[in-house]
Length: 149
Image (cartoon, rainbow, N blue to C red; front, side, top):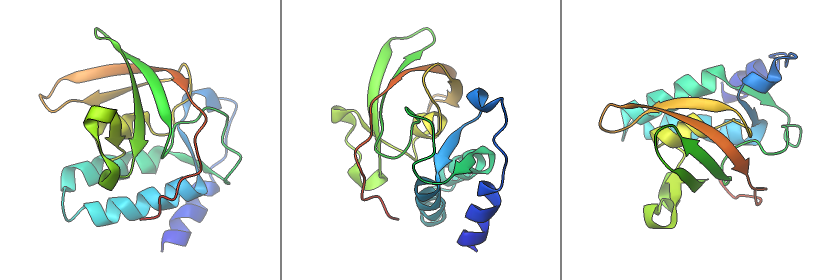
């Protein structure tokens, strides 16, 4: 079934409005689908947010996503409207370390950032129920990750 989901998503055409869509490579997409399934037992809300994001993502073959696309292992700098600039690294939930700015891909801000590129914006709801707007300023080149849920 996972192969069918990836295949369906890969068949989505990437139009000239690609600048406004979120994009992920096939491996990241597959890993995140598996993570969403396993996370649903622990945190249904976080899993539902991730599933919602994945349903809107355009999946491309590995190595064909535009440079600077936020994915698993990305270090991203972004501005939060009305707040300061932040730099975080998106990681597997098991590697979460807020003090080191290593934020889970399941966190609302992590889900909001997935698939974005420099100049793109998104919104997320914080734990206090506030809507927050962010704009990606920079995405550092990602290391090869061993993420495989």
